[in-house]
Length: 81
Image 1 (cartoon, rainbow, N blue to C red):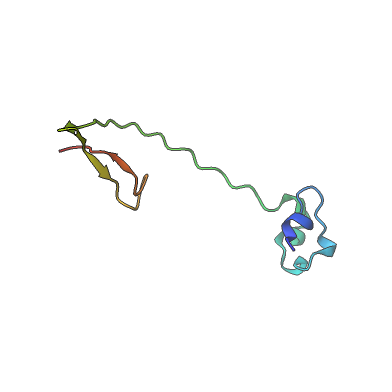
Image 2: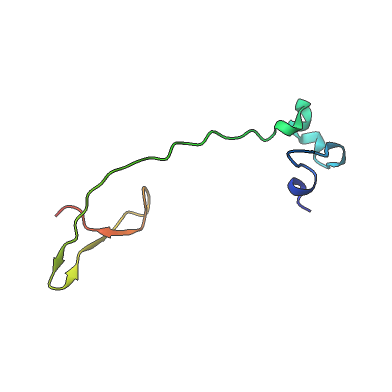
């Protein structure tokens, strides 16, 4: 059974029927409708970049980004020499 969808609803929490009532921070606070608290969203980063398409002999030069970091593992047009 999914407790979150059946008992611990945001508008009408049914704490008296919940088997986890003893461990619940919302129930202990006396105001279970305020739990869980909403997380503050991080701002979406904005980045500007420039790339070029290098063609030689009917081929295009591509580069694979490192697996860790921004857009990890994706292919991109080669930057630099």
